[in-house]
Image (cartoon, rainbow, N blue to C red; front, side, top):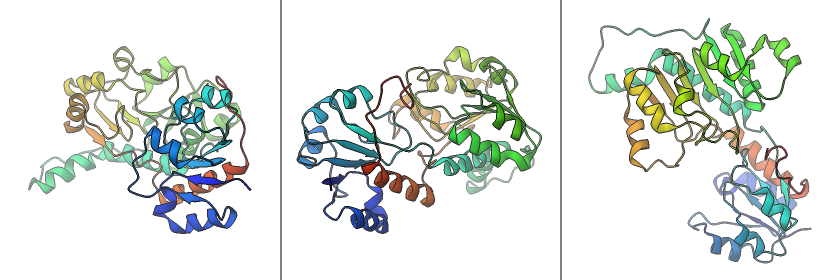
Length: 319
């Protein structure tokens, strides 16, 4: 039985999941709530351990090379942009990871953001709290809109299913042709250009990698319809936030809702200014923060201790 250490905080927040892990690995040790994760702390904490269950901590060359006994990293996260597959492969460290275990949680949040923007819930809530009662309280229904989904993987497909009762026109853009799925759910596959031109609501569900980082540049944002509602519950750094701010301010994009940011928590001036805009709705990376999603991610981490493989750079999910 491998010696297991745990740096993911889910197990401290939900003790019954800690009990589930301990039932399989009785000698596992857990990070304390007040431990600050640094490279040196990780090296000290994991010394002599063969497997670690992680959240979104970064395991650098310095850390991995200092832990010759470490054989497996098991992820509780769904995104893997904090994992360097080249480092793991170099040191023959295996990765346990399960795709899409929080897909319903993220998809549900996405639908709620769509309706929030269409009905201007956030703006009206702020106004009412300030003592305002506007004469015009007009919004739009989701039903009948054209929704574009950029990235139709696990979350994108779940979103398609959730949107069925709303009778929307669904466009999808993905490098993979999910022809059978598209036919079953009435989805129209389109090019990136057509997606941007036609979508009244454009929602991003792409992984963060070399090809998607910085994808939504100022020039790309200029291809959106002026009445477009832009939603990002995927990853920060995919959208140029400074360019988005300019277009929200001057009306080239009607409104946007983001759950993810290039800097978390936001601290730089430009990002803080974006958060102040009345037509920008922000949530603090809560897409996967439903209880049921946390349970699924924790159990994926437990499973990853024993079910894992050496990752291959350039191969899914690192392509």
